[in-house]
Image 1 (cartoon, protein in one colour):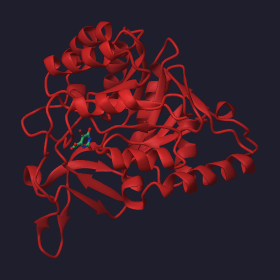
Image 2 (cartoon, helix red, strand yellow):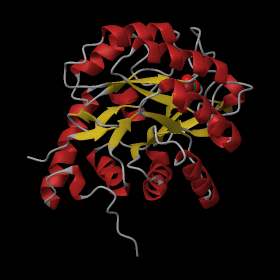
Image 3 (cartoon, rainbow, N blue to C red):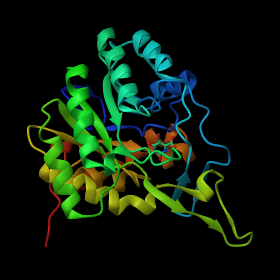
Image 4 (cartoon, helix red, strand yellow):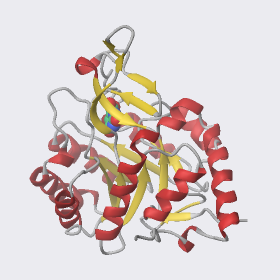
Length: 312
Ligand code: RRO
């Protein structure tokens, strides 16, 4: 039987799969579903300092081959997720990741301080890439602001953590972002990629945008972004030093895309659109499919093929 276990930032996951932050993780009932599922871990919805309703609906639509969303960071406020993290049972086999996405550096500092003060065994993923808050450009596309944020947050968090990155589309940007991240020993993983920002989906018959916020502009996810996600996973896998890892996310609908993410260099794999559409049963199915692929190819563990994509 193939071994799908992995570890991120020194913490073991019984298998490499978990939810992409934002999907099935805003409320405790959804987090309970993830705990019951065959996922190897779980991550909470990106938290802001205050609770938020998010953008007006409709704000998510499935598309042929993916999805578009402009949720606008609906969440219960960081204290809700802090309380959840405090009562979480860390003795069970799934570790807990917490996503933070402050609307300012000051908010991120306050939230990170609160988690540090609580001395919990959860792992922070700081979201540098929400594309959907009107009037707020994402940090991941502002290199100076990203370095300033890491300089401020790393000493506060004071233990290994990760950051969620937007997709990049230029080799110079892969180089520049990796060079910044490599300055921070504590950044032990990057999660690649957040949704491909600011797509526009239009209904042909009604000639109307499919979602309401931002004149219909929203982040693209699902199979249509697979190759962008794989490129980002591989670009950072090749460039990051000091044992830093990459969590792959984008375009995983079956064991096959998950296999490709690991081949590109992913140490864990998150599932977004497919989880939203199929529900938590997706984990059992995709896990089984990956096990069958590994058995057919003669791979016994993820280490046997991680990052080993061949080039011509
Ligand atoms: O809530 C959202 O609109 C959202 C966030 Br924070 C994010 O990071 N990525 C995304 O596609 N949507």
